[in-house]
Image (cartoon, rainbow, N blue to C red):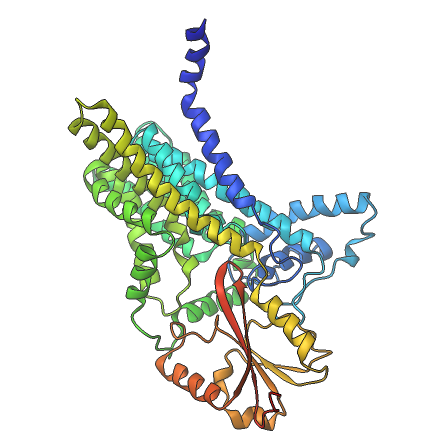
Length: 527
């Protein structure tokens, strides 16, 4: 009887383990999902939420912005329609005309309808948990089920994947779309002789949707184009309709997700060019090399255990995955080359390849386990205990850093602490100067002058404007963000000001951030 009960469990143990991993991933990603609401503390969420709300309100499918592609925006529209109908049923709203849109950069930064931001974050959670599932499927196809489970486990607890799932932005959706696209490309490679051109075209269509989610997904054209080159046996194979099906499918997918790339070509070209300028930052000379910055971040910060495993797995994969492995390698290499060559440094920029790092990491762990099992063939205790201890150590390290980021989300933001100090200590009507990310104070009570970085103006300028206090945050005024010249200007400026107080707290998920409040000379008596 006992054996009869255990047999079904053994047959489905992979499914049970995968379900447990997906539940772990969902739990980590749902924790503190309401952080900061209704405050608009993440500067990018409204760029996606407001265009979707505007479509619902006006019926005009022209996006307000095309900074990131519009596929994610259009996915939000039916969800927002469902939410609106529920609110109308419950008498919470009377018509779409009552939907108020937050204007990007407005003061105070408050979402009039935070529930719509929460729905967008929930959609990102679905993408993120889905990415863990696709990681399992890709690693299993490239290796075995054990590699799939190990890779999925790494993806489930990888701190950056957990953290950025809390934001209604396109980074995590692109992570999902990229790993899904590569899974489909590998599957088409494996079944090339049996499938029709429609399988290749379908994979291309998904690649196009990935590029429509965020434009750097366009790099998926490289593995998509490489596929027929790896399979071609003659020149005739390359000049066939089948070879064109993938790229044409990608173009169709992109236009389906971003139709106004054609319908409003000038706006699209302007938005795309603006993104290139933002990440290239012409004339900007950052401190240190971008390559060095990225290597330090990836190999020494919160994702380091997964990245080290991924680097080892990438080397092993060159010998294990054969030619089809290059479908993965070419995308990862091109993506790294792209972000290493940018002047703008944002930790989220690597997220599109983070699931693939988990796939590489699963291969590394499985290879080490097989090697150790052979070495310890006669010692069953050590054969099992040592790999289990290593895996537990890796997971604990990653979980601790993911939990640290989640705790930071759940604590009071430094801008809220600064807001409370200003409201309690600075008389209403006092002119203030703030940077790009200010406390949520009302400009109707405290006249505010916003300068992206307060180092951009000298003391005489602030005095001429009648400004009495400068509110300076280290998220902008940081030695690693500023060029040597700008950092020198900043230190010279603050050296002429009177420090009144220093406020601490988290900044979104970054712990121990600071805002300094300086008084412009002549300074008042501290007493």
